Length: 121
Image 1: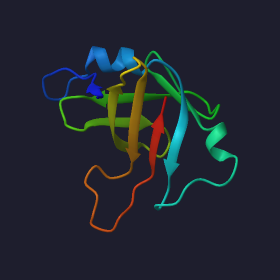
Image 2: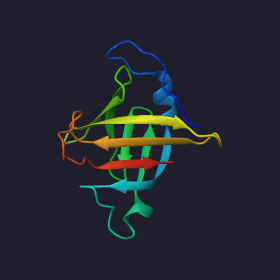
Image 3: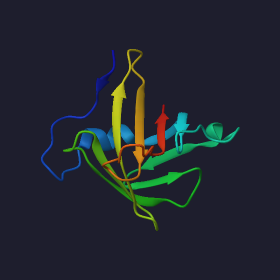
């Protein structure tokens, strides 16, 4: 059974446990956009790197990010030129590895709207 890595935090606050758990290189094991899987070969290239207060995807220039773990699911803001927002969840698996799930787009999804999602290990 998976368990959440997040602990209770005050509204608007970063959870140090989440920030620490996000650090490092994450490789996508599943992704969708508009309900469809990525083009052939894309999933294998899809990596996210969290280093301190910076984030990059697929080797892009690092940019800032903010997390707010007081929400369930927790919020994440990518402070890039598009200022993308999303939600995320961190889980510990039975084997002790971590899984991260993210949905990028509005934090409240309209019925029928399928946000891009990403599961990483």
